[in-house]
Amino acid sequence: MIDPAQTKASLKPKPQFYGAPVGILMFERPRDPFDRPFIPGSVGNASSWSVPVRYKTMPGLSFDRILGPNAGDVAQIVAHAAAELVDEGAQLITSNCGFMIRYQEPVRAAVDVPVLLSSLLLGPFLERALPQGKALGIITANASSLSPDLLAAAGLRAERVVISGLEGAPAFSAAFLSCNADLDIAAVESETVDAAVALLETRPDIGMLLLECSELPPFAAAVQRATGIPVFDFTSMVEFFVRGLIRRPFTGVG
Image (cartoon, rainbow, N blue to C red):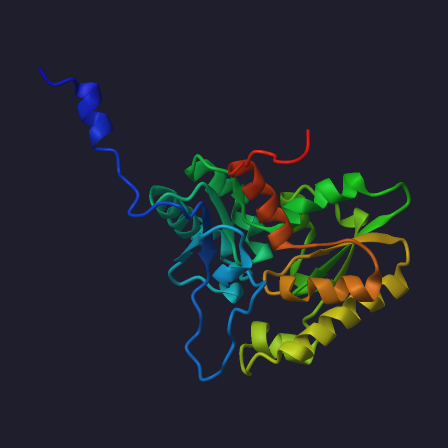
């Protein structure tokens, strides 16, 4: 006689491939004539990671749409794409935009693996680690869009962080916001460093920097060289959790 429990178990979906534990939700990219590659360090470049990753494009979703007045209407699209990644074998879900923090809770409710949709989730941890009297600085793609409700969704209070946006930086804005020019890597690096240095000149009490945008990790080393303080980003967050997913034995001298 067939055991119904075994029959049900045998019908469980099986991943199509194995060995890529990180699932990354991606916006649809606009069709245009410009060259804007995901460079090493970007969340969208698979070589940025210490383990294989898998990507999933969210149909119809763009940076502008998730910041629009009907942003909440697409939560189901985000959750469905995350669930598909888990069905394919992902053991951790992240995304390619810090503003995806808006969908952290809907995705957590839809999947049974850790969800880290935004580098902003590092904020409370970093804030708690700071010495007394030090502030957390955040470099973001668009300061006006990093509203108190989004900070609150990450567990941050607006009055406890100092924010600088890159919306006024010509090369960054052209490549990643208006999407009307090629990516000028050197110019974006210079703009990101300048924003960080200017922020510390205004607020010398900043003890750590958090880069919100998923396109900024390639410039984290340059920012640290210029500021001399710890700099964190999407890769800091995801790689921390990867170390928990894949523990390796210690080898050394006993």
